[in-house]
Image (tube, rainbow, N blue to C red; front, top):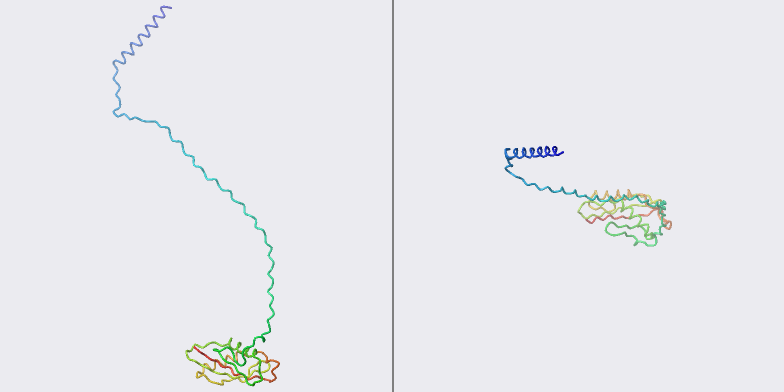
Length: 196
């Protein structure tokens, strides 16, 4: 056993000697010319972005159903008797015309106002800058029809006179004559006055 130990020591010594010779005669290792120092840093943790919470979509509210009833038809109010507020007799609102009648026994101012308003609705105001006045005479029969219409007083403008005459004819028939008026016709003098 001693012999094996000696061989082991000799082998180890030989190996150490070879290592020493090898390192003594080997070329020295060249270091790199530039040396970079590198610091290793742990990578940053990714930031977690909080997603906004989605608002729940509200369910549509059920609207209460409203029962619709058909609107009631408007009922006509009874018209008050128009004879309560009579206009002044034998005249109408000034500025547009003037109405007079034959005979002193006709006293229905309301009827005169009906005549005036119907003629006034058919009258088209002339565009002339002159002051003109024409009077048309006509008769109203019991049934309201116009008879014997003619220019009684001329204005100086033939077209104005004819326009006034046509307006009277276009307004026929008028309402029937009042029951309390006994004559078979009513003579009317209708004055057309143009004031520019």
